[in-house]
Length: 239
Image (tube, rainbow, N blue to C red; front, side, top):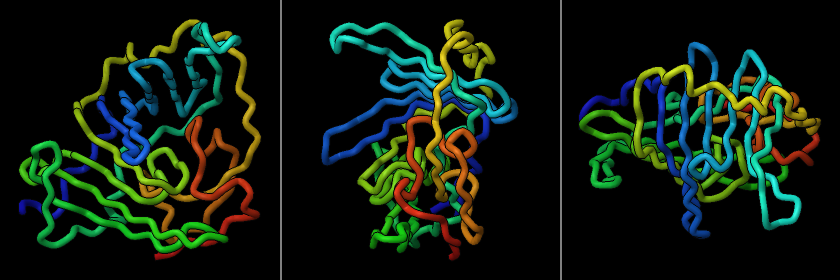
């Protein structure tokens, strides 16, 4: 079945993704450009309808249509503070390859990795199931499917599938990261709700104490953490 693990995920890349919630018929196209060295990222939803320009070291911005009457809309910019980048690939150090398991994803023969999470919530009884699929021939990512919290954008417990439709393993053109002029004078979004949690995507917090922080320090815009904001505190996670 080829190598036991796929090649390391790139830190600078362009990708065409699709986030699917099958039972509600939602299929959301997402285009991503990431420069890991410069710590910048552009995340575009619905073909550019809603775009985030994220910079971990400098001002960030969201450009989105805004309507006052519910019928007509104009593009508006919202300024954001320096913001952590999204991690669109799972942390495979937390997963185990399923021996002998294969699956076909969009015509590609794939190996399968799995992660089970038995306990997410202080006052809940959720069991998260996560599957990652990569091409047996090339190791290229094909799909990340979950019945659990959306660990890519840190959202509520549900049925999500991330389809990796295209991946270009090189740094994007720097011009891609230039935010529109309107971002310079845009109002700053005030976000005061504290959140805490951990992620299976990107750097792991397994075995470490969770810490609460304001969203500009830890949570991507428009997302929620593993824990609901009503929870009173964080606790230690361990294997």
